[in-house]
Length: 145
Ligand SMILES: [Zn+2]
Image (spheres, protein in one colour):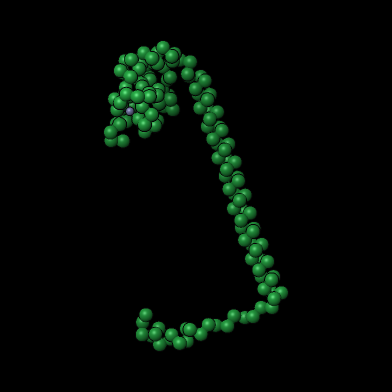
């Protein structure tokens, strides 16, 4: 604290007198404050609810789109073909070569016009499949990204 401020200390310690309000005035102010707070909360809740509804609708639309895409493309790969693919890759992940539970990965992603056919599908472990995302296979290196 500067010397000037130290000199002011005794004066700063004196609290300014607040204007006195009658009990009625205080009650009125408290009520106004409560109403303002309530209104604020109500607005926040309304926004939250609208956002949630919108998010739910977006999720539902996304799922419907995914289901529609799958319905039109899934029949192009048979169970036998999938088994054949896994044999070709020695039941290992195409990217990191680990054995284990394998998922169907599209070399050219469906979102980039790739097909759900034998020539466009390789086995991939779940971590590789989700890390690869919608990149084409040549853009994914399992041990660096
Ligand atoms: Zn992998």
